[in-house]
Image (cartoon, rainbow, N blue to C red; front, side, top):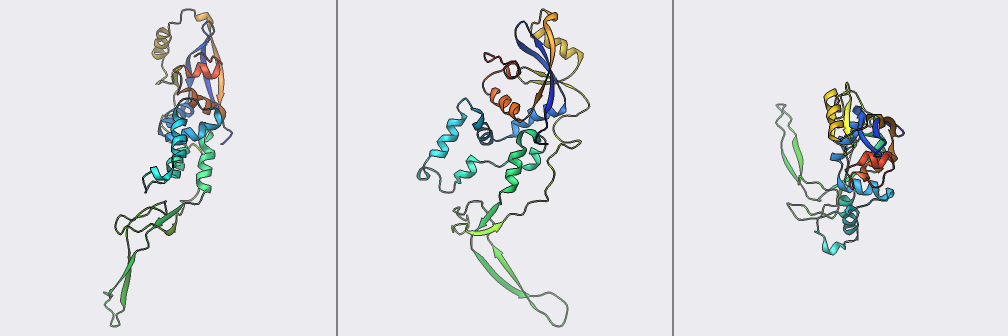
Length: 254
């Protein structure tokens, strides 16, 4: 699914060189809605190779450059800069973040607890004549992904390594009933990425709101969105409210 491309049909006003509306299916709308749930740190890291603009990168860079003496002692800076995204949520937008999901699963996850433990022994409650003592082990109920974290109970560092066990691997693909919107209808996507269910009334109201006067200047354009286009769309959404125009018509003034 990593090479999957999503189609989007645009209605373009050639007189003003702008996208009036787009007609999209479930796959594109699910992609847009999923962008809201991606941590900002993941967005910055993902867009770094696409000449990210704006100020988010400056925040990321500031955290990366900040000396540990100025950070809270229990803070793991690596985790702040590399927030985890669940594989199950990534499954709804495979062409955008499939590589990140694959990377997440390929890196062994390690958890830590403090070294405290105690033993207690008591008679087994069995009704058999020959009873045996039952021994139980008690640990402090805290784990961390940072071996330098302190146990809230005893204050010792969490250095006892535990190994995280992944759930069975699943194919990253969009299944029926997954995602955000139903797939039995089309949706109107505005130039500013506002989404509405498709209807004759909504299409006419959009044309009126956009003050389209020359209907003969309107033409349809089918475009395709893959990983590169997804990154550019995400980047454009931070700097303009005419995202589709900027991305697909090359209008950098949008």
